[in-house]
Length: 506
Figure 1 (cartoon, one colour):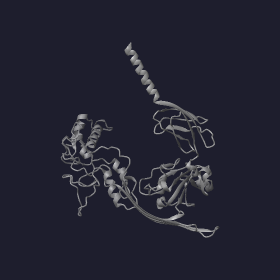
Figure 2 (tube, helix red, strand yellow):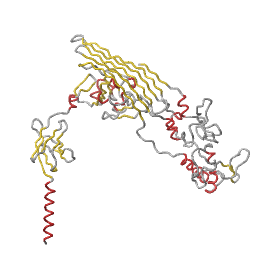
Figure 3 (tube, one colour):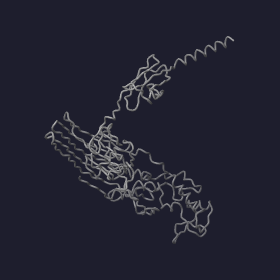
Figure 4 (cartoon, helix red, strand yellow):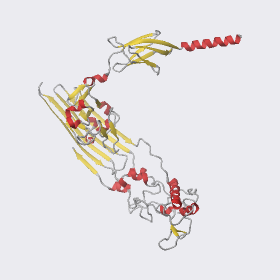
């Protein structure tokens, strides 16, 4: 009995201690006029413990004894922190402080405080642009402005994303919005505009904000405002930015030569047994011998080199695949009759079997910029010069751009102002082809991993070189080879030898 009483007393003490670790508090959240703020968030700082206020601003909350501070916040008000102390009653007053209400946004007829605008507007400012290594100004909208659908560009340097603000329009028969640069409708390439020259990119999304542009603005309006000098000290800024790029998403795993040959062997073997329109029926065992190339062969005639089976002529998997054998075993020893790769097989060459690796490189980006600005009560001047050299991830996808801008304004009298905003650039694109076999990304995805980029000696496996010592490309139709598809074509060679340049002076 005594032990039971001691145990009961211990449980009571533990329960009392646990209960003492938490306590309940209550209070009310009001605004500057004393009105209750409903749906305000009340949380213990540094934790997820919290609640929301009722319609009159009151709340109650159980907090741990270690809680020191409450964080109270609500839309349209500045966040407020309150020390908990020992009191169980908390009162807090929130002050209006949504900074976005005072933000100035660009609209069709000038500028306006966001709080005074009733339209749907999204805006990206220079601060958001300055640390993003973008070549095309429209890429600044990708993932940065709400309510805008963007499609990924081709990936080539300077390429523009697709932008949908309001859907497909019947007036323009497209979904493209209207673009306006410094108040002028713009239909040029956005890779011509230096992103460092941009002050804001504003997207007008609803009818009330685009009304000034009429039917042309039915799909939405994207307005770009370039920088002007700001009153104050003279400012000279020099920028150097360098970097590299690689794909952010890893490639899908693919089979290698050791995996591909048995798979091709199995497909050929099954076709000999189960294929439609067969003139010479075969069993799995016979088809396995045929696929591996272990049956007698014709010594001469039209079928010379092919295997003899029941009076028919059959090729082995080595012949079917165009007589490509990257392994160090005989042509009839690559895949055994059980469908397994020869355990003694190893690659004679393998550095050029991955066409994607041979078709790509590490992208590079180097940018140099100089900006000068000065402004007084009567005059302001902004000027910028920039050089950009960007090499894309794919071969022969390059961009180089020289750009300059001068924006000067003078206030001659109280009622007369004058100014000019001049910009010029020279942009050179080295475009990567994207059509059919010349598209290296497409071709590298379906060519088997037994076909090399370069021509190899079928006996030694060594790379064949021309008179200058340069490796020759394998077009699939030389040295006894007969690649079963795209014979006579080579995506990398055609990609590098074809010239597709675009030079623009604006």
